[in-house]
Length: 559
Image (cartoon, rainbow, N blue to C red):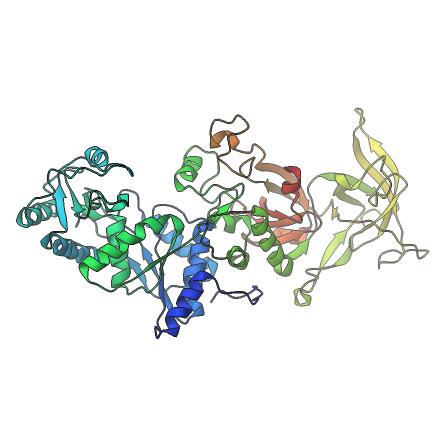
């Protein structure tokens, strides 16, 4: 499960592995984890790290990992998100032991709520959300008990049953745990267990109009599934004592929660609410826009599952929050694509070159290596003809010393082909260079030359007659600064920090082998970068996304 294309290296155990090995040394032989997303949006790279941890630990220790959807809020959840989450996990290379939903346990959670009422540990409160918030107190001041806190068990049971039966409007009543309104942990100040929501649920329909809160449902769901290691991100550490309190109060299987640092990336925003705003306001093309941090966006951009897993392994499992350089993720995808991506030639900023001593109408096939890292990838034929395109940046009229590309009177080798010499520069009326006239060395086709001389410069090219015209989308970070929320330069909000050059659309000319490329296929455009076929591609109109440059040029530009 999820091991191809990853070089396994010996490393020290992370703190979660140490916890598991210590418990196993004491006789605990079972490891059961779970990945518990709420189906109210698309997963992002931070979730990918959590997926790799939960499924990876279960795999390493011969255990199981469940996929459990935290579907306790019918207003925000949808089958669309359920399907996308399952698709993302499968794409990453993992599979779950059982597919579960918090809604599977609604009956049991309701019965346990009744148990807590009967124990005097829960009560129905008629206060509004605003009143509850006002009476909760502060860190320095205790909260004020609800005037309904001392209702009798019988009255609470009756009201709770009537809440379930739908007698009350949304917000009219809630069920709260009765703990301690002066507790230093604010979450212990009589947390809400159930609220009234008259909305159709994507799985249970209209069976329920009361829904459990996360802090009540999560630990009990873990207990039902007998989860041994409930792994959450660090912001949930303050919730752990309450998690333990509910389990102890109900005397059920003692699942335990552990927290690790969430993933934070430079130039990247992980807030689901703000990402939704980007989508709704049209700042991006959708949830799978390659500038987004979502898993579906990474897939569309050309990232491989192996590269994402390798990145999760590289950043590791820490106890403290930190910010990871985006360059590390790009390094991982470069490393993987270098091994698996076939090479092709593409010119993105073309300059026309006419080979004046090449026979008119003659086409010659040049043999090209598909991937120097993989002999099994074989070779392909690339057509060469009288008129070709080269990159405009590969010619300079007045070059500096040690310039090894093409210049007037200078020579360069065409990749997989001949030496050419620039004999004439053609300009338009405004003085812009529009065409080069070159001659080729007829004996230089196999890597030599007519007199044995060597040329240092090698550039790529495409035959103009055979070139495939395509739309090329060049993606850069969505934000101008490493911290999207940085307002030090006079920006009023993160919206002001959006990078106006995060997407540059241009036209490219590609070698004809790319005409048959399929959506999702990734290639190295030699000397340019890694690109994949976008989902917008249709017959006759190819669209390629830049996955990553060959080198980290963005970091250098923005230092």
